[in-house]
Length: 477
Image 1 (tube, helix red, strand yellow):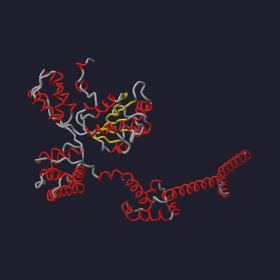
Image 2 (cartoon, one colour):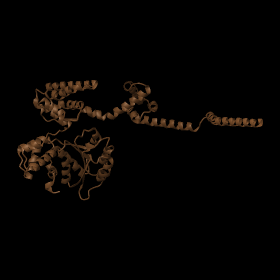
Image 3 (cartoon, one colour):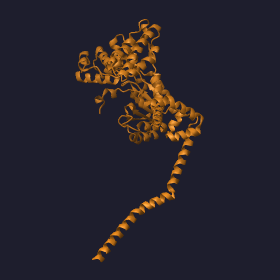
Image 4 (cartoon, helix red, strand yellow):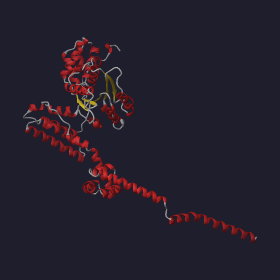
């Protein structure tokens, strides 16, 4: 394919790290990480580039490989997402070094496109790759907070990418127009940048479509072709949009551009509200609106009255945004938002809570009580027993048929000893059962033998009786 026919997103892809638009913080993190790899002491073997579409994640990975003379290998995790595909292609790549280059840089694109159910085993295969890789491993994702990526986040270097500003996109589009020698109106470029909403890739595609279709990029041509895009924003961006909204409709529109549930959105606003708003009176009004929204959400959960959701959304969005009246400038200052701690704690304790639920179900089944009563009245006593008397605890564990995870939940200190005693008791029970099955009692054997011989005796008697009856009949004749 000649260079003239190449899509402009490929033709004008950054050749050097400096050519990547904006993302200075991400560049510094990546350069430091690559230098650690060359020194042979990387703090993390893999990096996760995350951010909205079209912000330069893949472009930066390619630019790093080109600038440092690394062989570049790209895999789309949404296409090759089965564990067998990853092991067949990527595992070979991470174990081998390049023939002619200094090394390799492997990119797994769109790892958040994997499904926990449909792509079972893929995440485990990626975690194995990270352990054995001999080359820098880069992954990209739009949403790094997906629950499926939790084990991955703990094993990689997180590199955040920001959504590009309209100024960044306008500058990049003007440069392409100049290189392509196309007449572009400033208003037209500004309109394309507004519609792109931070996605440089889509902005370049729009520019090329209009330039090749009309020969000149004018505002009328742009308006005739482009339509508004339905974007899904990251939680950080949604919260910022709600806080800086001047009108109620802007705040409500921001809440509709996310996949977060209303309860999750309340947690995000609650976590970052005191960071954004500094005036105590403004903060009081904002929290008052947020607490009322939480009351409505609670009523929806209890009664199922979903018609109340409109009131909750009004309060948590417009109510919070318009509560800032005294120090309005605080709405627009840049603040680094954080992930809600409640959601993090719930995610970390999910496994423990599931073990507690399973344990309560076992106790409830044995004692004929409810799970709620088992959790409140029985489990605390079991914890005391398991912490103070391992021998008796082992007997209880065998009697209730508790798993090792349940034993660890009931006693952190004595869990290993209780598990060991439990295994011995179960082995002893199995051994005694085998011995009992081998030697049967003599009375049981006699009874079995008598029962087995009884039918035969009855048959012989019947036969003899019949034979006697036949002889008597013969002699009578």
